[in-house]
Image 1 (cartoon, rainbow, N blue to C red):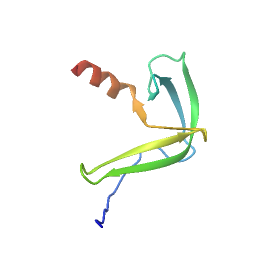
Image 2 (cartoon, helix red, strand yellow):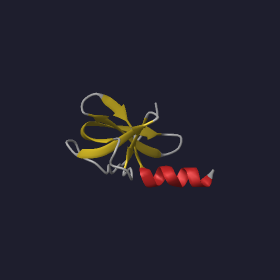
Image 3 (tube, one colour):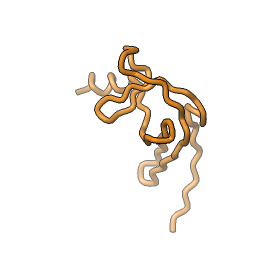
Image 4 (tube, rainbow, N blue to C red):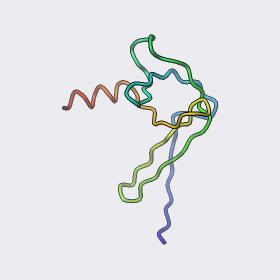
Length: 83
């Protein structure tokens, strides 16, 4: 068995309230329009570590119901500009 040690810095804490737009199954923060967004509380944070890639990502439980990655609007628009 391989041992994995990592350090991760999460941009959010339990109990934080985030403004989220759920669009096509994605939870987007920093959405430029107020319409279609809602405030949700982070009730759990799941850390995902890839041994192969050496990356760490976070999945957030929102309002005790949904588990999703939070994608900042500016990252999403950067991705679409590249394609």
